[in-house]
Image (tube, rainbow, N blue to C red; front, side):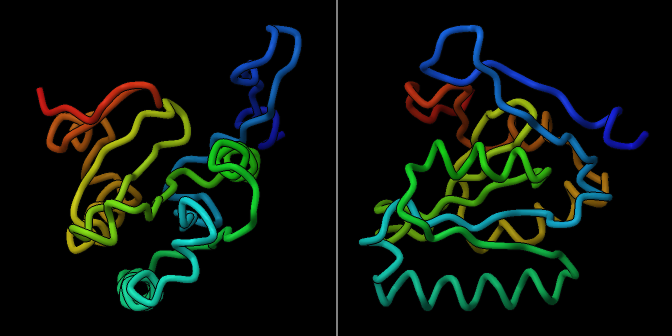
Amino acid sequence: MLLEHVYSARPKEDQDDKQTRGVLSFAAASAPYKCVILPLDQRIARDKRYLRMLDSFQRELCEQGLSFTSDESNATIGRRYARNDELGVPFAVTFDFETMEDSSVTLRERDTMWQIRLQLSLLGELLRCLCKGSESWQSAFQRFPHKKTSNEEFRKD
């Protein structure tokens, strides 16, 4: 019965409307994993700076009591987002080439697929607040540079 209430299907991006992908929309407070950590590609996954940032971030998530998983597979970032949407993971943290320069990451929310850009040092606390319900995604979206589609540039309204 629970799955009936949290399961939905949405059209696959870049596909005709007949194909869909499943999404488990667990509330962040009850999702088994609160976030997935994704390096943009294998070059980042092998970078020593990424490994240091990843280790520190994982320790912070543990200290905040937040469960997480990671996906360093060779699949495209879109496929890895979709895979974790199917598993019900509410947030995805993406480390990219910009992260290596300025320690900022992208946080994507599963249900809207909207993204914000913020400093890694702010992310643990924000995730805790989002999962606890003391801050809404709409509020976080307004506070940080954001975009609604992957084709947009990040902007701050």
